[in-house]
Length: 278
Image 1 (cartoon, one colour):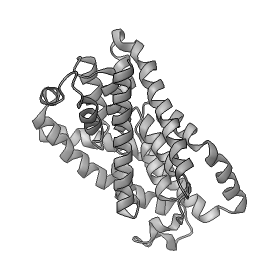
Image 2 (cartoon, rainbow, N blue to C red; image 1 turned 90 degrees about the horizontal axis):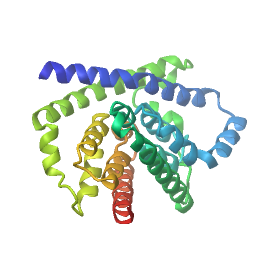
Image 3 (cartoon, helix red, strand yellow; image 1 turned 90 degrees about the vertical axis):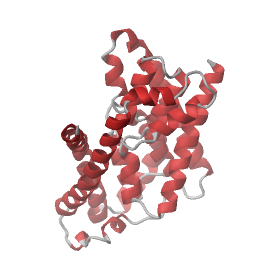
């Protein structure tokens, strides 16, 4: 069991490496080569950030949430764009549903609900935010390691990627062990069917910062243990390892807890709304 948990952790971490490296390369390139033209371009693209983030986030790969967390930590995207990506991130859910021919028809409603939620929540957050763009300096990510002393882009990007990969490997390994001992069946019993609290419990399950959370929510939904609204709540709250990356890279820490509460509240609230309206 320990060996299997470790191997699964290695595979989960390896799948995120290309996205981690790509995000850090963007951050380092902006730090070294950005100028006024690039800043103007980012400001224009930023208006469409929540919409673009929600669309890209629904692609079945949790690496986009990893990239979004890093870009937000570097001050390149707004809070609304970050939440849009987190809320629409699908991870493995689409692949699991495709593996069940009888359930393939539920893919579009699930994705549509998550994308619409991501776009709406993202623009609302940016509208009411006093400073949609965080006043950060990309080089703040390098203060603790000294890698900003080099003019090379690849070296600090690789260094950040490796440091974060080690962190994710350890975190995922421990989480896999917990899931092995607890089991999916026990989770199904904990999440009571057709209860008012189910969307809140499903969203809490989705907050597990690992791609496995989307697998658990999807399997419970296919088994009839979760309603459609609860499944949307769980999958919307599930940002993959993006949350773990956010808590590792972004400062101040209290801002991360606010983002966590926002993600949970929006996902659970939308799940309740779907349960009442459907």
